[in-house]
Length: 144
Image 1 (cartoon, rainbow, N blue to C red):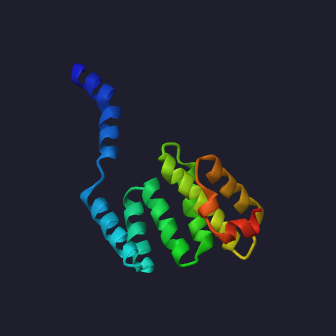
Image 2: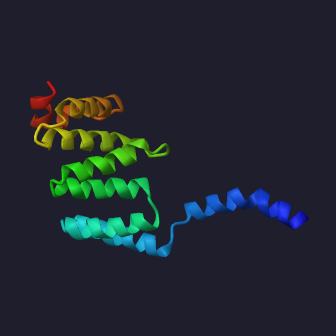
Image 3: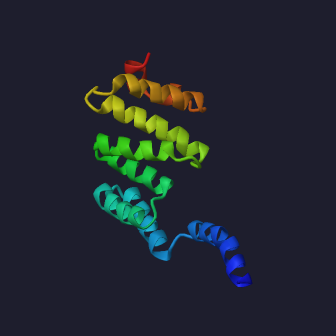
């Protein structure tokens, strides 16, 4: 009975430790996807990221897949991935800032369908510390 009590007491800590240690398969898939993305093989990178996300729905990996979707101009899918990353409570500040920026660009580039909220996302990225003056003419054109 005593062992059962201690086992139950430490179960949350064991689960937390398991969450912090990604599986070797997950790690390998992410490395493979990152290499493919760096080589501009975005379609293959998305496949590898998706396999990794199926193992562990990691917000940083989902963000990277969103960037690959953006590179292929698949804006709706990129917006979904950036939104997932933004809504995750423990995302890093730099990823959060960049996710707002990239989601805003997707919304602006998506045939103008989401333009007002695209500007809202860019404004949020700016409030989080991103220098939008260096972002280029698209931001200035749509969000003066």
